[in-house]
Amino acid sequence: ARGEDTEHVPVWCMRQAGRYLPEFREWREGKDFFETCRSPEICCELTLQPLRRFPLDAAIIFSDILVVPQAMGMNVQMLTGKGPTFTEPLKEPEDLERLQAKVDVQKELGYVFKAITLTRHKLEGKVPLIGFTGAPWTLMSYMIEGGGSVTQSKAKRWLYRHPEASHMLLKMLADVIVEYLLGQVTAGAQALQVFESHAGILGPAQFKEFSLPYLRDIARRVKDRLKEPGQDVPMIVFAKDAHYGLEDLSQSHYEVVGLDWTIDPQSARERTGGKVSLQGNMDPCALYAPKVTLGAFLPLKMLKNAVEHFLSQIRSLSNGIFSS
Ligand code: CP3
Image (cartoon, rainbow, N blue to C red; front, side, top):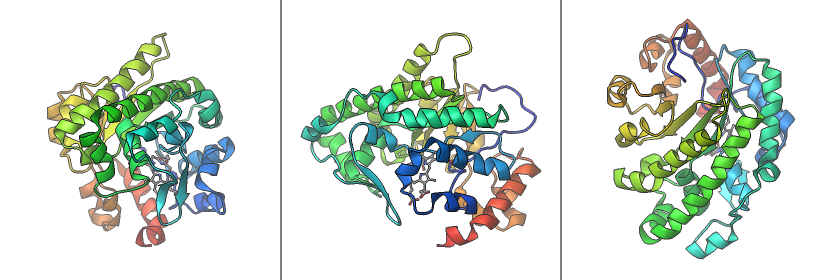
């Protein structure tokens, strides 16, 4: 994350803890998803599971980006086959009054901090622990859409029709996110990733107005508050499908920029001018490729045997799940 030389390219995966693992399904069976997120012991176990099987170089805490809207007073459920579902999404600007603007993160999200501390101890320094959050625009879009959406038209309607209220909501979210990330660092997180998963639905102009300023503000405020020696924690930004924003993202106080698979890594290096480390770039569907050709789809040619071994294990474990 700091751009130093390492003996191999470090490997970790988004959602490395998940349903492709039989032991994950066993632990999750019969339990509500967010109830699971609120149990530090179970989160710790689920975080460690992939590390027992694969030579991964980092752990990412088991949780979800939607715990932040919950902390602000919204009711979210994870419905089987449907994904995240808000019982009462935001419809009009007046609905912002329903939200808790000043969130006591220790009280509302202390369970995540507990899970981080417990996991950090259990890891015994073997690999670093990554904490994360959703970015304001991505969370705003969930809060308005009420769940997954292809067009995000309800959330984008706010950007066009209610720009001021949109900024108000984004600012509220950024304030909570800053405290949430700082709490994660205090609890033991050694790197922080900010997921702007819905960046790609914005065009360049809306990205510059409604996403980028908040991504920057979050990183700057977190870093300003972690000024003591030894406190600084590298930050990673992943704005999915925002290829037009790559240059801006590389100048946004993040040490690492995550790439999705639509970006050519070599040109991303050139466009970011060596200012940041780059990570990611693998198309998850490359796991469907036959093993002999899989190597050709790996993002960075440098990846070693360990990675291929890891991927083929994941593939064989997850056959049934991906096809269903
Ligand atoms: O191992 C890890 O990577 C850490 C855990 C993690 C989860 N969610 C657990 C999870 C992380 C980093 C996330 C982030 C997250 N959650 C994002 C950002 C990354 C991205 O995918 O763009 C988003 C958009 C969400 C919201 C969310 N949560 C969705 C869209 C879903 C899918 C619903 C489905 O039906 O699969 C979830 C559920 C979720 N979050 C699961 C896991 C392991 C699967 C649900 C389960 O286990 O029952």
